[in-house]
Image (cartoon, rainbow, N blue to C red; front, side):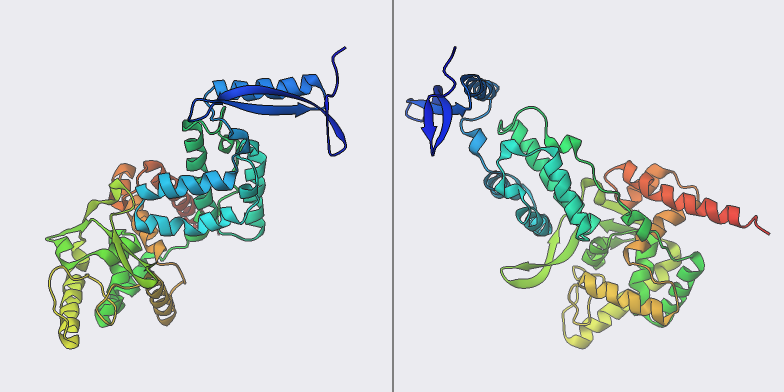
Length: 374
């Protein structure tokens, strides 16, 4: 009978064997020990390890900690390929990952159940679905890299992870009615500072895209969308940061609705007068929409302004982002083909447009059926 154990460590008996698992940089063999409660268990550990090495994994893969591997990947592989805005956007997601149990685990030990538990804990702690989606994107990219660079073998654990139900789209679908929009438009004739919200509703631009527009981006009857702006803390200074649009399809041309051209011209004159009043030189490279000091408008300030305006006009309280949905909804109701709506809104995938407006169309159908009652 084979010997069951051959060594004692801290009072416990083990069977220990060793094997050459590779060579170091000098060409010398690397020896590794494998221990089990019996010879069979120790030999299985050795054989499994060598099998993984032969499949392409690097020596020491079983000791690599998730935290070390993830930090190295993000700093040396992922971060250099991202814009500064994207790096900043991922910061909170990285912090949530750092605060989980994942960094304390060995990379090879992480299974789908560990990530699923992490996601469930985030939802139990009322983390937003947006944060969870950011974390999901980061982990999916990381484990894809691990497979491609032979840090893990088999399949990514992300394949079996289920995202918690996303009800954020449902919450965002509260829209202004056409009458509400007309009220907003009428008010803009009295107070041109409200025009930016009319512009958003009739252009479908994202907030950052709208706030990054310059006067020269309006050429004839076309709005040229080619950049976005967001306030970020850079070198400890909170400042506007211009980047290229969100996706390749975000760079687009949107026709200007003739009905708001008069308001746009009034707004442009008001901007020139504001620059003159403050002694700031005006040219076509200046932002189309500016703050009281002629700088870029911060998105949070824009949102506060919108909420106050809605209350003043006694209109339903909706988000600035909902104006973008309103734009797509109006096009959809007019029978504009989905691919055209998708192009005008700058969606990277037509599925994104379809997913959002399926809900809008369902609401429209419900309202139509409701008219039959009584």
